[in-house]
Image (cartoon, rainbow, N blue to C red; front, side, top):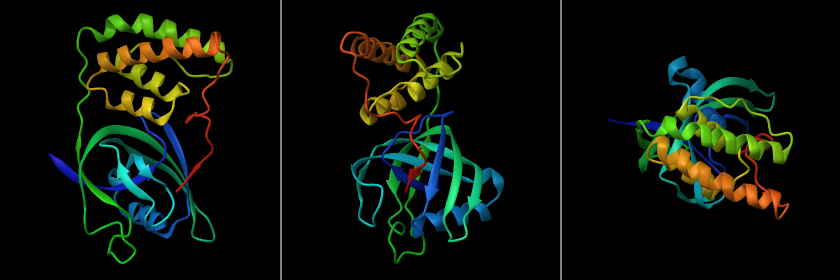
Length: 222
């Protein structure tokens, strides 16, 4: 079953469970927040989709989007005197973007922000996923100790662990999107192991730290 949801394209990847603050200043996204606040509480969510080509800001900034994104639930909204908003959101469910609403996303449209028809993705966990947990937890703990200061509770549940690692590793958009798009928990944990091994070499041998870090970024402007 598909559903129509507001979309907020960003230059970052949101994964389930990750807190994402946003500073909303563009008129179309101020309208989005206002529309969400007027909706029932259980409908106050929008889809965050990483930008494949283009930019966050500007009427014609977004040229292409990734196919898989994450619903973001509003948890806190602060309205500023000049009409801007500071909002807190948290990632909930993954979805696949099926198509865009052609009657949205233009300044002259009744709905100036993008909307898309999406289908929620399942979160299958097979018997292999729990077997991967000890190796992933050990590799993630080793990775965190090398970075010094990266803090995160390391869960034992395979699904939660897969997203905790995806949210707290210092990865670029492409690698984080690959983790988000993994078809099941076991596949995501296997990919996480490969990425952790790669990053461990970079940090320990080359003494290089990736430049991108979604977790430590300030509030993302739209």
